[in-house]
Image 1 (spheres, rainbow, N blue to C red):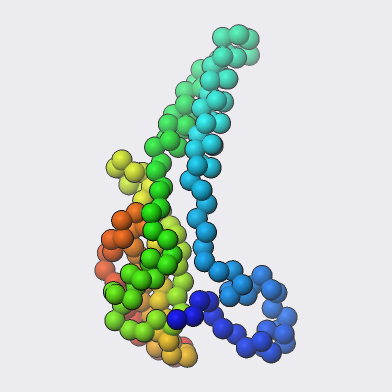
Image 2: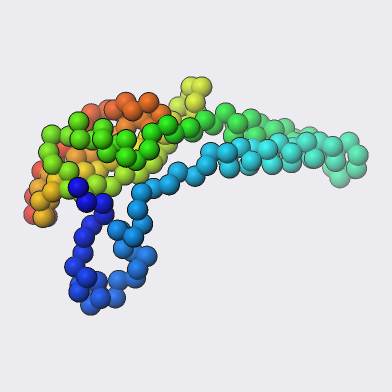
Length: 163
């Protein structure tokens, strides 16, 4: 199983492909720390409180509506729970059990589904898998819940014609 797409080094030199486009140089996706989003919620809530305080201390106009909007925004940000309990390697193990063809190349992207539930944002690993042939003859697309390793929807597999 290969990560990324292997391109002949001579072709890369001949076409002057920049180093930052080398898919093998990037590696696995690193999920940003969700606590950073909490810091933003703290800042928005602090801005709401400062606007409310300035409204009563200084006569700058009516800042109450702004304070309410900022307060609601901070509550919304606090309600977003995007904890991801599964990493990319666990997803690859899941793939081997659920795909009926060989795994040659794959692409994994982390997306979020918005739901009106306790967790407003549901993290989802979207995976595209190609078989090991060159050029590939099969492609499979699936979505996996990044919170509890459950397949979302059906596994879609198609033949690649004239690749």
